[in-house]
Each structure stands twice: as C-alpha cells, then as structure tokens.
Image (cartoon, rainbow over all chains, first blue to last red; front, side, top):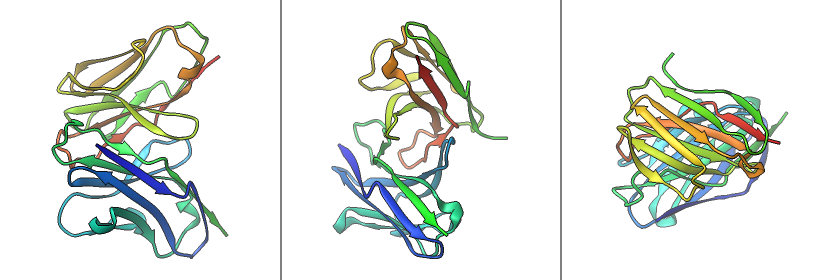
Length: 116
Length: 113
C-alpha cells in the first residue's frame, strides 16, 4: 500500500525567497511520484512527476523536485518565490504494478503563502 | 480546447434530492476517475473506470453511482443527498499506465442544505 505525508500544512515565505515543500512517501513497491498545484476555485494542475531515471526532475513555473529513495522523500523546491506561486500544493504517489490498480494517493496538501 | 470538463460548476440542493454531475474528456484517455475533496482540502478517490469498466470502487455509500457510457464520459449520480455530501467533486482522466499523470477538471462544488 502507498501513503504520502506532507510536512507542514502551511508554509509562508517572502517573495524572492526559497520555496521548500516537504513530502515523504511510503510504498511497498517502487513509486511513481507527482506534485500538483491547485489555485483557488480551480482543479489540480500537474507540476512535475518522477517515474524512473533521473532523480532530479524539473517542472513548470521553475519548480523542481528530487527523488531520494533512501529518505523516501520527494521534496518540492523553487529558488525564488513569486506572488503568483501562492496556492495549495499536493504530493501524490502511485505504485508500480500494484494491486491498487492505479490509485493516485494524495497527501493532505500544503498551503503556500507568499508575502510581498 | 483539450481538457477535462465537468458540469455544473456549482450545485446547491436540499437534503433528500437526487443530482448528477457530468464529466467529459477529449484527451483520448482510456481511464477516468471521480475524486472528492472535503472542506480540509483532502482528496480521496471514489471511483475509476478503464474503457468503461469499473476498476476502482472505494468505500463509498451506494447512494453514489457512477456511469460511463463511453471512454470519454464519466457521470456521477447521487441519490438521497445528505449534508455530509457537501464537498468539491473532481473528475480526472489519464492513460492506463501507472506512470501517466491524471488531468483534472475544475471541480463541481456541491452544497447540500
């Protein structure tokens, strides 16, 4: 079975500062990992995904994440926050060939606030 | 535009009523999903269909009944609505492979009074 824990339900940064959103996963099989962003009153938009290969993945809007198997982590970072980055961020996991038949399991979300 | 579209965007109704939410995707995907997002923004899968076949059926009251007339459509019918059904319901679609990301619609905000 898979699960995801996002550390910190609310993160506040100043504009221009580093953004770090933490995600730890649990999976009995090699995971596929995703980060999604949700703006107010909208659906979820894919930021980036890790499937296999390079462990540092780059996504849209300047975000990137690094898969660390030894730490079971997939933290999301951005060097310099913009006001437009303020949103809800979700980490999600899916298992390779798992009996979950494709269930995408979400973390509880992290609200990112960007202060001017 | 290529997208996942769901209607209506807002749905306000009284307890005991029956309502439906419709979803359509034109991305050529073969798998579609319904997720429920509660007031704390937690997302939980409800159902999934692959090529019109139900493959995921989570612990959901049987007042909720999905229907997939074809690969591009997945509707959700809810009978005898209860206050606790108030939430945002998201439709999503993907290719059938495990490494395929889900593409989400903009959600239907259901309010039961």
